[in-house]
Image (cartoon, rainbow over all chains, first blue to last red):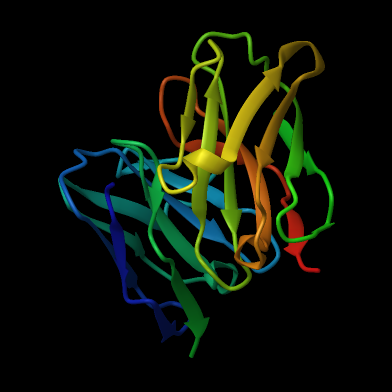
Length: 106
Length: 120
């Protein structure tokens, strides 16, 4: 099974910061990667698919990049509503989620 | 628009079988390419994919849970049912159903989730 490892597990940031979250696959997954945002008590929300394609309605401050085994999610200018937990998910072979990255207010 | 909603017991005893129903609207599971998946999340922990059923009744299961899971669909009722046997306290989690994007294996619409507690 393909394992997905996110880093860091959590970090603190301030509104306006540029933040980057990394996701690494245990084997090559081409660009079959999605990113989700989850807020407490809510279902995950799709942000990005195919590693870099923004889901309709998602603000352009979110961007994704990478292919093969290494991927990043970047938030260019952190807003108050972006404090949440972010998950990557591979769909190259089956479905596997990363362990999540919690973005907290500094 | 697409909506999904999970229903089922909130409390089950160890060794019992859990049956969850996902009732959806805004799409049909008889349409080519469509799929519905189940994902769970223990309190404070990460998401874990469990199972998925396709429009053509093809089914996929998590390898680690395959022996305990069964996924079925009732196209006429717009429902997908997940059963999990031999429940254990470690299966305590919020269970979500989600719509698989046609032709791709990520999820664009999710239900609100239902918390299932396993306790005697």
